[in-house]
Image (cartoon, rainbow, N blue to C red; front, side):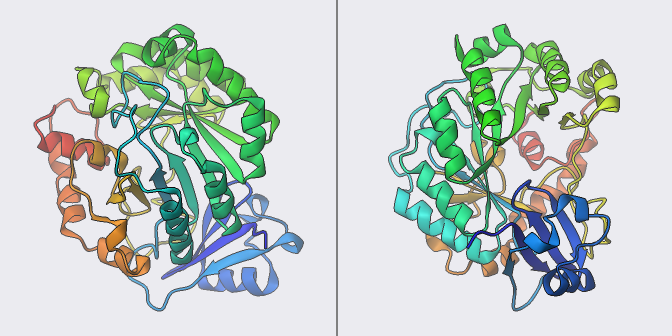
Length: 390
């Protein structure tokens, strides 16, 4: 059966995800009844949802509800630490595969479990996920279970043939790394890799796969990222300018995290692009709506701008479960390991009450009160602060 909407019931009604375009909306109980029984979407969201006569939905229900989302929206599966590149700012020092990685059968089973629990999107990451043997079968499996399939990739391994296979096996979105214009990108990621990535974007677009460029901004490439964002805006390609955190191999790049003053400079330099089109966004630049301003009133508070622990999970190659990849890379102890989870729905409910999450959230205010810092809701910034960072 081919689904086009993933519906997860919630304490407030439901979270709906269009499996064709990745658009997500929240609906009330009465609106959910109209969707499931009459195939009628609320007027203000109908344009981003499938037409009613095409509606074929997957529904995840729950026996009881805690005062939070019923489950994570997205799971980032780090299939491998192996990578064909050794980028200077890599958050987790990828390059060589770990010996205790989950094998193909383990990931396949895990995807089934997450689908049953209500996950709506799986993003395959790494390392470089395209070097993982069986990646296409994992994508196909997730897609057939009614999950929106995305990938985080450096894209240098994507040829026309690879792009075609990705499309055939259910990939809907590619999040591609570009860290500036050609000279700077090649300096960070290796000579010749800019052209490979640009070519890959074209191949993916030809297959109808949605593209989002992730660009990590540092003081050393700040102006290059600004120029790249202007270029991509002209080409109508979405770019998300990501904060740099000194972790993994990136810990060697001292004094590269942007200050509040730096972000003010970036915002001003991109003012025209930010005002004219929706293609340029980023941390502290054009924030995504993480539910703080949802179309309906939610019965619980959300940490705006950070999904960690509230709407997302990261699972590393050895099966450790983390709030986010940056926390994992900075040595923050895992929440658990997939081998210990008997019921993912129970795990998620318990996670919302965990002391680890509470401690990090309580320290957000302490970090934000430091003079001259960029205010943030990023839990990884908090961990860096606790470790003595500035």
